[in-house]
Amino acid sequence: MKNETQFEGKKALVLGLAKSGHAAASLLAACGAEVTLNDAAPDDGNPLAAELRELGVTVICGGHPETILDGGFDFIVKNPGIPYQNPVILKAEQLGIPVWTEIELAYLISEAPIIAITGSNGKTTTTTLLFHMLNIGDRHPLIAGNIGTVASTVASKAKADELIVLEASSFQLMGTGRFRPHIAIWTNLYEAHLDYHGSREAYGEAKARITKNQTAGDFLIYNADQPELERYIAGTEARLIPFTTKGRAETGISADDEQIYWLGEPIIPRSKIMLPGAHNLENILSATAAAILAGCDRSAIESVLSSFTGVRHRMQFVKEVDGRKFYNDSKATNTLATKSALSSFSTPTLLIAGGLDRGHSFEELRPYMVNVKAVIGIGETADRLLQFAESCGVTALSEQQTLTAAVQEAFRVSSKGDTILLSPACASWDQYPSFEARGDEFIDAVQQLKV
Image (spheres, rainbow, N blue to C red):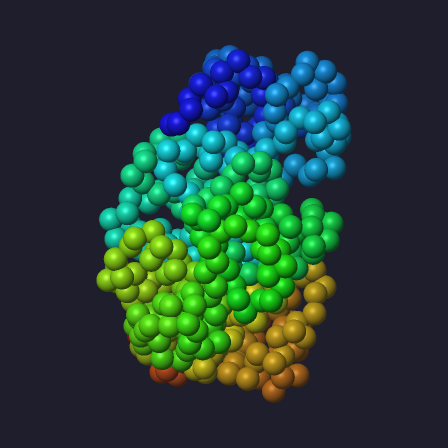
């Protein structure tokens, strides 16, 4: 850990007693800071609170009183989910107190260079792909950030010969000051999280912080198929590495129907890539570019691309059973995600979809139903989905009470060469506690099929 004494004697306020808040408070206390942690929920014997008190952290639970700032703090580390309209945050900004998220701490202490990935879609797949490429290429990667492992904890143990592969959300990036990844990836920009950011422009500006402090010795890999990104990155000093899926390009990384190209030269045949879908091709290009820039051997990159079948619950290839290929896309909790999934296949597809009924229309899916052979409805929206299928001229199979029954029905009516896809276009909470639980049942049901 570099500059271990930089927080010694500093007064730090950590807002939010979740995983990242606990990690940040523990780290700062270990570095000699005077730490106060504040959480809105009552204490109620929280073991994390008790653990922090043992470390000398002052823990205040049950609300975010503005008076908490009266003691004076050098900086605040907030949970990414706490909005900037929070009264404590607003007052801190008025007082000129820096407000960070814990990825700023990660950068300030990390001996290892950071590769950071952001974007509206594809962050997790890109992060996972890149991690595997670097791992097989013996570049000693560590995975961190929004993907589930707390960045500051990973950074506190990272060594100079390792690489931190960090998935960074817009929420996390907003809370950065000096954060500077050596390699940054911006996969795409779509309308999202407007309730938090207030506008699409503000959302884009938050994403753009990934390259704000980069210098000429750093790299920014970005989606050249989205001209909108160019205005957000216009001021960067980083070396620009564009990626495009629209054909061979002489700069950056690109792809046509036959090959992936690096600086215009073919490097990997498309036929060797296992992961399907145009959206996944974007992820593949950006991860491959980062792996090359990080010194990864191209044989390692090809090895990953020829075997990687997807992140669990995100267009995950599960198994082929008697000529039918099963894909788990339980993470598709809206029509945008299901559109991407359907556009990934040219084979006859049996779509298993449905879930929590929020009254959303499925009309966006209509142009993507051309290869859908049948729809099997589940959950609260099953009836509406089956009616929609019929209006598209697609066979609407009966509503199934369980996902296991839906898998069995899809298998029964399918033929060899068909794709059976779970891509619900709805949240899971009508039947399952999470999309992960829904996807796990799908996987189990596929594994239990008997020919």
